[in-house]
Length: 96
Image (cartoon, rainbow, N blue to C red; front, top):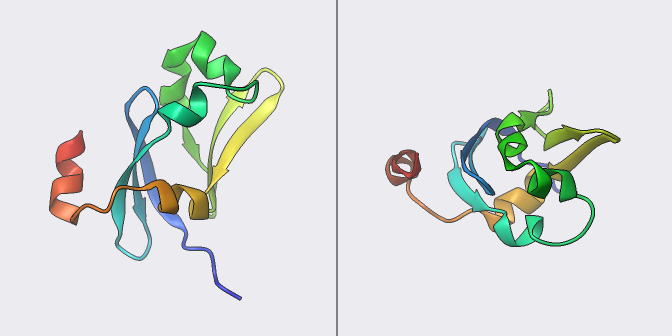
């Protein structure tokens, strides 16, 4: 069984884009705009895009989440890692 690679930090770059650092040293930029564009789950972020900046990292680093009026909506470390751009650590910091 593979262990989940936990995240160390997350910060919004712009609406729909996160900069994430994992505990194994990997850093990447994750573009979620196509995921957020459709469906009901993230509708609250489309209606109020500034809420994207309220992203939180779950205590153990397994998920990032946003709190909406009905609870929280989250994305897991594994799926975010797959979406991350493969960038060297030095250039990932330039994405800010």
